[in-house]
Amino acid sequence: MRIIRSVRYKVCADGAFMREVILDGPVTEPFIGFLRSFGTVMTLGEMGPGFFKFELKEGFSIKGWIGDTNIEIRFRKEVMDLCEDFVSVLFHYYHDGKPDMEKLRRMEGKLRDKVQVRLYGNSRENQTGG
View 1 (cartoon, rainbow, N blue to C red):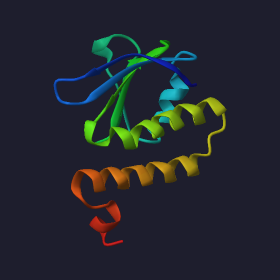
View 2 (cartoon, rainbow, N blue to C red):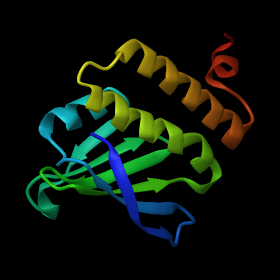
View 3 (cartoon, one colour):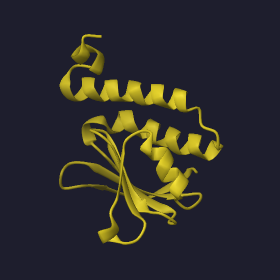
View 4 (cartoon, rainbow, N blue to C red):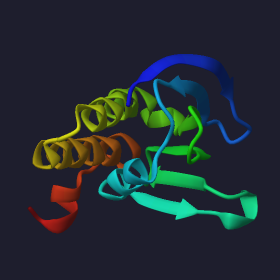
């Protein structure tokens, strides 16, 4: 699954930056399962059947509906530059069919460390004495 193009950008009231993008195929249940490996996924039945929200804490979120080709990606403004590439990598690796989960988890760990440093001036290693 790949991002074909962005169709809308906006700055949200909370300062976050939102991109609405079009994918080359519909969001599927297996893709939602794939995202669970990297953050929190919520399904919100009250929003309609198939609505989901993925969140990588303090970095970005993805919202949309299973079966749709449009999704919304919301970035925390302070770390948007760090998170955009990881979002593209997530979609690219899933499209590949057999993602290297170990490599993706290492990339996610590095991203989380960079986000921590940017937001709080320290990394998870420093917090745990590692």
